[in-house]
Length: 362
Image 1 (cartoon, one colour):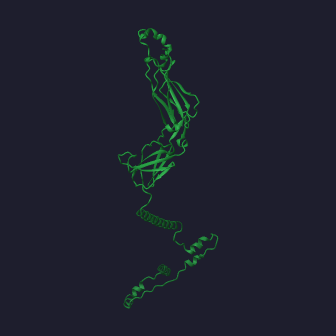
Image 2 (cartoon, rainbow, N blue to C red; image 1 turned 60 degrees about the vertical axis):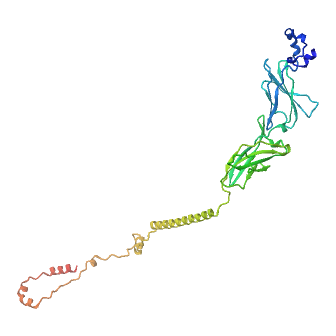
Image 3 (cartoon, rainbow, N blue to C red; image 1 turned 120 degrees about the vertical axis):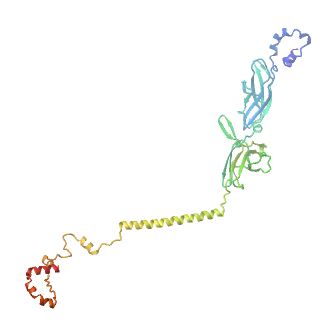
């Protein structure tokens, strides 16, 4: 009977039929014997979610109406068969446990059970290999359009743990990126579209050339790890419009050349006439065309004490006058008839006649 009690939970005790009527009386005495494994249902749907080596053990809480349940998680390396389990976390209140502290290069056995005081459930065991079981997340992508091509810069994804950030390509032996690009406008999914082009590269930067100018292209990138047979998640869709293809048309070259020649010719002409005008203005202001007489230059260049070039004449020479006598010719008839009148005419004084003469000369 004791073996039967220890074999299963209380809800399925194989008790003899004669003891069933007295079960309420014996239950307080049997409870200490029932504090063995199997009293609490085991956690359900235990699983590990791992993205970029950030791993979490999750499960569904069992149905247990008496009190609050806690959980214990233990781990053991598969490589050491004789090793014992080590407790990772205990007295967990939530149905999850972070197991990112395990080395990504190892292989482990994880076991989980529920506890309530002295009662506990059976262990739930599962295998975990971080490098194999983790999911490679999407990388970070930057897209730039330049000279008719698209420049794609890729970084990551990264493993983050305790404020540290390491590129995942440092953990794996081989690493490459697959770049998918297509013209925007199709309703099909990029991965299934037959016209989607792809480029595989080991570098973190790639130039997508041979694209149509002035066309919108969309790009998504994912990581590839051939040695581990792993394919990462696609990055978010980025779209960018291409510009000209970098080849300048002939008509633009001719237009620019002719325009440059016109600009240079116009600038040269304006500068020439402006310089000529300024030269004439400067010459007119500072070097006028009037020529000062030479004799005046010589006269003004001599000091006041020097002899004068024009000697002064005496005052008498300036007042010299010649005597002039005016005799008028009279007709003969008049001369005979007017003899008396002529004789009767008073004779002018000599001084008066001389004065008149001087006045007429003057």
